[in-house]
Each structure stands twice: as structure tokens, then as C-alpha cells.
Length: 295
Image 1: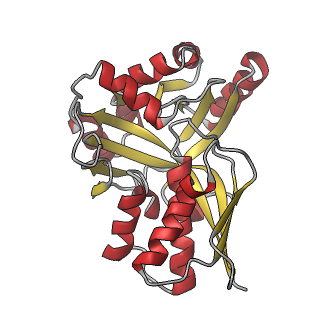
Image 2: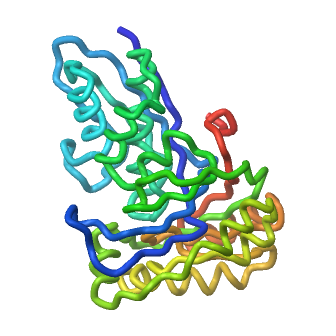
Image 3: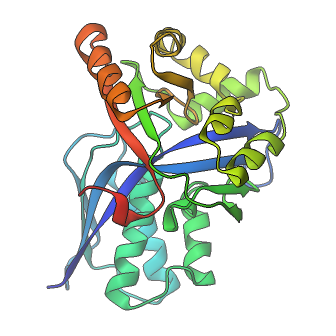
């Protein structure tokens, strides 16, 4: 039987502005500017005639199979295109869960892309994008990977920017994770209006990494700190490291990322975080397509 493997990269938010209040779907309005990273899961979708849809992972992500984003994505795409959901989805995890790095959303998008390849369907078609939006707010971004502004609930692609180039990134994750539900519950207890996106959009349009570093913003970071106390410690530690231009919590946390001056700096800091702090860490880079990810 045929199978397709798709790399499912992590992301970081260069800007995340969450607005107080929820819409009729229970979502917050969100202004989200994201870039993809070279750190990636591997998602393989295989035809399994006569067998029900099944998702396997090589780590326990803390969710049941039917709640796995890859399962939901496959089930909904099959329903939308009138296909029988007879597939095996195997996920090799490299992106840690509950880190604000978009791993589950990326796995869902990779599942959609693999099925589109098997069916010879265009991923950019309206029907596919609508399924992606229904699965999760970040899923549409992962269909493309170019630096992007998303609005609505963070699920409406509004603007795409030129590739940032080979930008070194270091990721450092506290021992405890933060679920998306936790972060938003904390935000709702003490909501704050977000800053606008003007600065980060200007920086991305101008292609200046230094300006991008100066424009980082995330008004969900306070909620992440309250949900996992070590987030603030990691933020302080990373900001103090030589070679870090700027650092910030990614998305809903708990992971903190730093834009670094060089790949050597990113690798050195990742080693220090692991060896001296005992934390999960990774030296990686910004990517704008799956072709740039080392498989």
C-alpha cells in the first residue's frame, strides 16, 4: 500500500496579541505572526484498506487517539472529500508537547498534506483550508510555512512575508509544560488588551532581523508564567546569555525562544541549558519551506 511522509515543523510566534473575550465558537480573537523552524516531527500516512483510521505516536503526548490533532484532521478531511478513513498515521515526535511550538497543529497539517498527496488534491484549495481551520487555529499556517500574519482566531491567513533567511534560534523548555487550555484560562482571569502588529509587520517587510528582534511581543506570556512558574526563570536565564539578540515565550508556552547572533551561539546556549540547567533545549533555525528542513 502507498504511504507518504511529511515533515511537521515547529513554529514560534514573533507577535501574539490575544484579545479579551471569546467568540461564539469559544475562541479569542488573535493577531499572530509566525515563522516555522527546522525542528520537525515526521508524519507518515499509509493506506490501510479495510482498517479503521489509527494514529500512533512514539511518545505519550497526554491525549487520547481520537483527540489527537492528526486523527481529527484525517477524519475531517476524509469526510469533506467523501473518502473512507482507512489510514494509518504514524508520528515520530521531536517537537515537545505543551510548549507553544505548534507541534500538534503541525502534525495535523502534515496529515492533511500527506492525504492531499495520496489523493492528488491541491492543499491550497478552499475545501482543504476550511478543514484545516476547523481542526485548529494554527493548522492553516502549517500548510504553507512562509512567515505569515494570521488574524480571526489566529486561523485566517491575511498576509505572507518574504523568507527571513537563515536566522539562528535557540529553544529552551522548562520542565513543566503549559496546555493551551491552561494558558487561555489564566489569560481570562487577568486579560489585557494587546499591542498592534505595526512594528513586527514593518520589520518583516524590511527584512531586518535586528528590527524583528526588537519587535517581539506576546501578551499571553504572563499567563504562561502563572501556569508554569519556571517559565520566568528560563526567560531570565536565556535573556542573560551572550549571543541572544532577543528572547520571548512562544505562543502559550512553556518554551522560550531566543533569536541568536550566530548558529554557534545557538548551539552553545542549547548545550548550556541542557548540561548546566538540565532542561530540554534545541539549536535550530527559521525555515520558510519543508525543503529547508533536514529530515
